[in-house]
Length: 296
Ligand code: ZN
Image 1: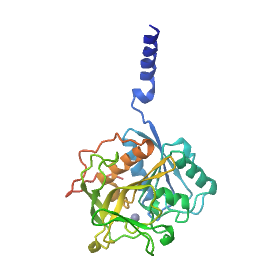
Image 2 (image 1 turned 90 degrees about the vertical axis):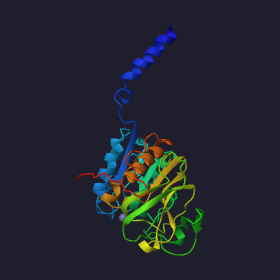
Image 3 (image 1 turned 90 degrees about the horizontal axis):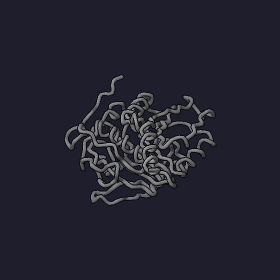
Image 4 (image 1 turned 45 degrees about the vertical axis):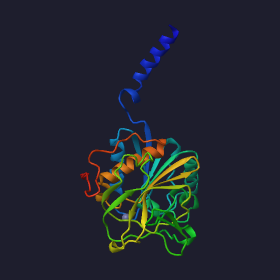
């Protein structure tokens, strides 16, 4: 009898809890932005915020720095979030914010790195450990090897000298899933066509504790490196999970259903280690891109 009333209490209180009754978002995400050599960053923040919110899974805050220089007032409380999405490529954060950020990821916080966020903080060792690979920002052989896959799909860590980060003219390109068993890529077609984007190549960095889930061939005929470059990858940093995609240069690139799906599943994985969000019906195929006009 006691057991039954306990069970009843659980059911009643459970059903009254807003999270369960109304399907309210269960994960807290923070987008950081404010400085970026990509002037469309306010658009891409808006887009990514909506993509995350539209899943019903995420409640999303945005923390924006001052437009120039180190912003002493930029002190988000990262510990309130399960995942931080970086759309930031600018001046160093205040020392204390950097330390709090490292602590946050080390203690199990999730991080999602999108496109030019991997250009940021070339001199910040811990950040470069977290993101695995980066480009520009003074990166060179001292930052770590070039990491890519060869024609046989074998991982190459190339220590040769040279600057990190390059891309040819924008074009649509094929994403090749290399690990279809990871929660983020599970169920994706083995090959899908990404909407016009910058194909980042020659990224370099420590590349430690890193798993490459998908690559794109940076064709020399399209101004690329001639290598299979990491396009969807993960890094373990302390107890934290980091999800990294160099895709997402333009508003149009971020309208790609492949990008959207990769972003929201990557964020869910970074936050929880699992993925329940589905691959949508309008996902791109090997020969056809798929774009959802965002509307301004
Ligand atoms: Zn770009």
